[in-house]
Amino acid sequence: MYNLCIIGLGNPSPKYDNSRHNIGKDWVINVSKKFFKEFKEKSKLEALIGESHDNKILWVVPTNYMNDSGKTISKLLRSTNIEIQNCIVIHDDLDLNLGSIRLKEGGGHGGHNGLKDIIEKTGKNNFNRIRIGISHPGIKEEVTNWVLNKFSPEEKIVINNAYVAFEQVFELLIEKKYQDVQKILHTK
Image (cartoon, rainbow, N blue to C red; front, side, top):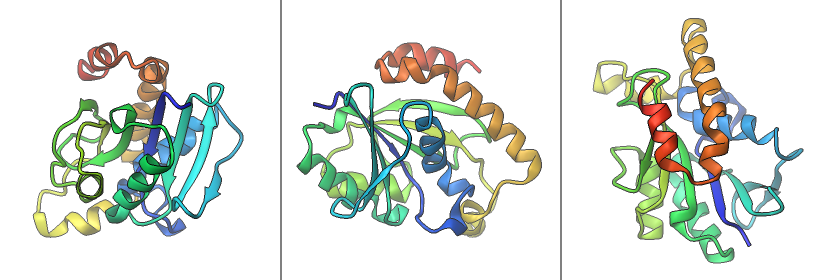
């Protein structure tokens, strides 16, 4: 019986690996390596799945496109004992400065199409989110290209430092000590 589900949003093709939009997926795959060997593909769920902590934590990386993430999450909720309030969705956020990390409990989609699809397809918004700042290009018309592009070498340094901070609070996160996580991340 799962106590927690960690979901990393991104796009499936290798051409999107290490792009701004795939940071949630990339971080989940990276941090999972500490807890289990590899993900298994579950085509019925349209996801890569892993388990850790004596099968108490379910790790999920949807294999469909970001804007269709809700389909996977909806199937997941129907086929497991997980309730959506025990899910943590890790995703990119244009409205945060590069490398900023925020934990948000519930709420709207904030214009993020992956979150919007999850809310629409599950009918619920009371899941937790780890928002990773990718910054904004400054011009609305450039957003699509911006999120699909890879980080510059200088930006990678900032993102790598943010990942280290994420790793440092990860145990608190899986223990559901959300206020402690917020105190640490939100004061950086």
